[in-house]
Image (tube, rainbow, N blue to C red; front, side, top):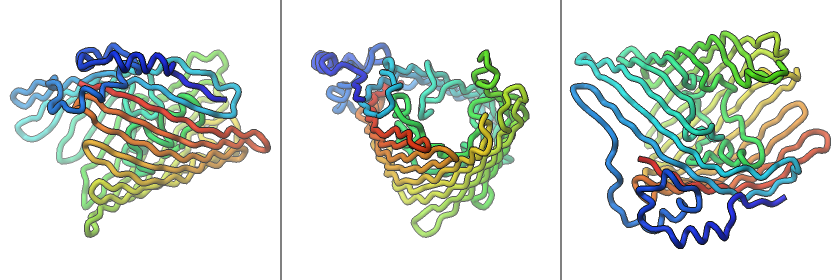
Length: 372
C-alpha cells in the first residue's frame, strides 16, 4: 500500500508562486506554501522581533506558530487509511517573576491544535511553579519526573522511532516508562547535588477516553506516583549520565484493566554536539486488559545537535507476549531562518503479531515549522 498525503502537482505549483511574504503569512498556510520558505529566507540574517516584556523582575514571553507536514508511506496493513492534512497551530506563554532573594515564581501555558505523536510541540500543558535553591515545585498539567529526568535514545525534530511517522503508519517505540503524561499533578524536582537530581510527582486521577461507552476502553488510574532519578558527571571531555524512573497507580476496577506499574533505566554520553544514549524499558501488562502481556524494550541511538542543524539515528526493539516491533529511524532539522525550521524523518518498521500477522513498511515525513 503506497500513499502520498499531499498532491505533488499542487505542491510544485504553490512552490513556484511563493515569495518572501511567507514570513508574514506562514501561520495561515499549509505544507505546500510553507515548503519553499527556505528559498527566500536562507539569506535573511535576523528573525522577527520576539514578543516579550521585562520589568523589575518580571519576564513574560509569548510565542506561537504553525507546523505543516506531508508524508509518503508504504505498509502492509490494509486498514491504514490516508490521513487528513497535518497542520498544527500552537502557542506558548511563559511568565515568571524573580524576587530580590532569588526565588522564581511563574507559570507556563502550552497549547496545540492537536496532540503530536512526538510531543515536540506539546499540547495541553498548563502549570505554575516555584523555584529556589531548594528545588522546583510544579502544580498543573505537566509531564512527571519519570519522563523529564529519563535518558533514552537521542531524538531530534520529528522524533525518529518515537515520532510523527506513527500518524501515518506503524507504532512508536516506548522509549521510557509508561507515564501519566499531562495529567494534573504535583511535582517536586530537587536541585542538582554532586551531579545527582531526583523528582517525585503525584496525580490523584489520570483519565483518557473517559466518555467511551465501553468502560474497558477507558483509561482511569487513581493515585498515580512517578519517581525519577538522574546522575551526571564530567569525565574528561565527556559528560556521562544515568537515569532511572518508576511509575505506579491503581486502575479503576470498572475498566477491568491492570494497575499501572512501569520502570526504565537509561544512560547518555555527551561531548560537544555529540549525543549517544539508550534505555531499557519494562512495562509488563501496565494498565492493559490482557494480563501477562510482559512488554519490554531496548532502544538506543546517536545524534549530532547544533543550534542551526541536527541529525539523529535511533533504533528500538519492543517485545511482548504476542508481538514484536522493530524500528529504525533517521532524521534531522535545519534552521533556514531564525523563524523557520525544516524537519524530516525516515522510519523503517516491522511489526509482528504472533503467530503470522506482519506489518512491514516505511514512512517518510517532512515538515516546515514557522515560529515567532
